[in-house]
Amino acid sequence: MPQMTSRERVIKALEFKHPDRVPRNLWKLPGITMFRKKDLDEILELFPEDIVKVDSFYGKGNRVRGERYRRGQPATDEWGCVWQAAEDGVAGEVKEAPIKDLSGIRKLIAPYEVLRNADILRVNESCANTDKFAVAWTSIRPFERMQFLLGPERLYMELFYQPEELFLLRKIVHDFFMEELELWINTKVNGILFMDDWGSQRSLLVSPNLWRDFFKPLYKEYCDLIHSAKKFVFFHSDGYIEPLCPDLIEIGVDAVNSQLFCMDIEELGRKYRGQITFWGEIDRQQILPFGTKGEVAAAVKRVKEALWLPDGGVIAHCEFGLRDPIENIRTVFETWEAIT
Image 1 (cartoon, helix red, strand yellow):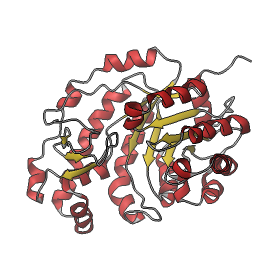
Image 2 (image 1 turned 90 degrees about the vertical axis):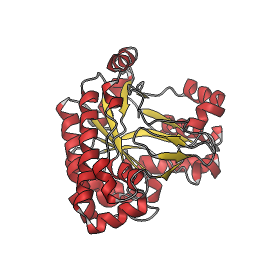
Image 3 (image 1 turned 120 degrees about the vertical axis):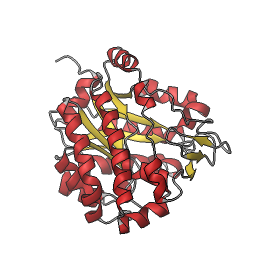
Image 4 (image 1 turned 45 degrees about the vertical axis):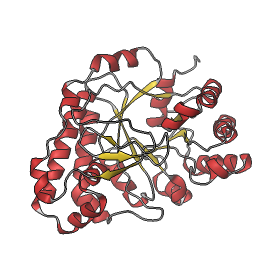
């Protein structure tokens, strides 16, 4: 039997149709490319990825200023949110939200110029030049974007009171994201990613009922539109998100990237194995930066035993952080190679 291509392998894993091995994917913080490219190249030569992030097609926003991922240099994004990084090579935080009070929501103009000037041809050429599974990384993150625009404290307060301006803000953000998604579904990508961080270390940041009432309908529209184009839905969320897993499965998320080690991995397996593909990860808070090779291997084996089926359902994934020893990243993929 001929060996599967990377694209075929990932699709088989997502559809629970017996891939020839577990697919591989490595996330690289910007600082890895900036400061540790030799280590990155070594890992990718030993363990080529099956999933690639396609070239971005967005145009430049009119409000964009400065350079992201540089310490001490404020940078303004396309919505007018001002970011600062605490160290080179990391995303940083929004330090200045552009909406100072609720009346400012009515003056908010979404950055449609980044969509009007999108380069779809570049994306399609990127997809045509690889046999890997191509994932589009969208800017779609309604909860986080609303935080960036209002400030997190203000957003949490308004989610409690739910004034009419909050619904207007949700509409402005969601309408923009749906138009963005319309562009992506007309490209040749295989999967489309959207995201929102919903968990703290041990619990959700909002109640499950609030999430289901206010945000789940948006997510369902994203999933439905992506599936209408016969593409796969990829979703990322940090923190403890176990209470949302049944909803993510219900609305059609195909692969979820989450911090498994913030949750009971075995319980996740008992409840959800075979219903959704777990797209990593291995603990990036303690095990990858500080663990021994034995601890890294044990973490991979734990994920495999709890979540993997011979049919599929797992993508071997971890994040390469600035301080992670290369030996630990290598051990992640060596262990997956040996046990599947």
